Length: 399
Image: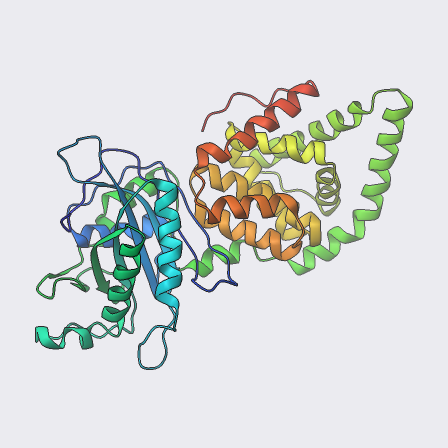
């Protein structure tokens, strides 16, 4: 395998997390084609693939055979790991083994046996012209890559290329960790065809990962105002359910509650923001598991974008299990549309709000094992079925 790759088929970027066993991994998926013909093009495409400009990260591109048996492999997944180094630039003991284990797991899921590596770290020292001193110029990462290559080989995975760059900016130098004579400079990231395709399809590229995590930050003032209405919302929901039971049609409560949520999504689509009482009503509505599970079906349809905006807003306005419900719906929707970085952050927010939330735990497992969006999408199909059983058509799937 050369350093060049070409892709005529959909690629599947994967954003993985830090290597520590106690910290969870994140993974992202995409259906976009990735075309790269040199390491510089690969490196500047990375922000589009993971949704933000990575810093102090190890990126692993997982390869598979392309449609042309005589052509180059294609990039099927891209995994990102946080880098941890000490003051001398050496990796934390055991990091290479943790990276290798995670990469091997992803390769097993993807049916791949070949990967490329990119290290982005502003602490990396510029490459020295003397090849004998190349390892010094690697800022400690030549040793990491060497260990990673050996560990991956034990798992029948080939590390076919590895490069270092201090930052992903135009004219920034990059250098190879496997071939001391292979160096170059980055083209303009803004001119990347992969980046242009992502922006064209409405997928913003954030300047930092923290911009994504900030999206899920609760609004403390709003949560207090919403909490003040929860008792009223619970009482009203109880009265509606009791009335449905007395009428001999308990499903009428689920149906009416689902319809109320759908009307709120339609309002969101028209630009109307919920009031504090409406947020409280929504939170209580999602406590009905029939309603919540039916709403997973929206992630696969024409109202997905409006629903995502509402789940994001509701996650700002609530705490505890209510916040976990909203964040899980958001994470699922992001997952199946290809924004796995946001999916991982949303599902982590759900877990932080309620560590026992069963659906958040299930989706986190799907993410960390690299399950493909088309497999996870079955949950949306179940949502359509639940809604149909209540007499409600969520519309055709469009994703």
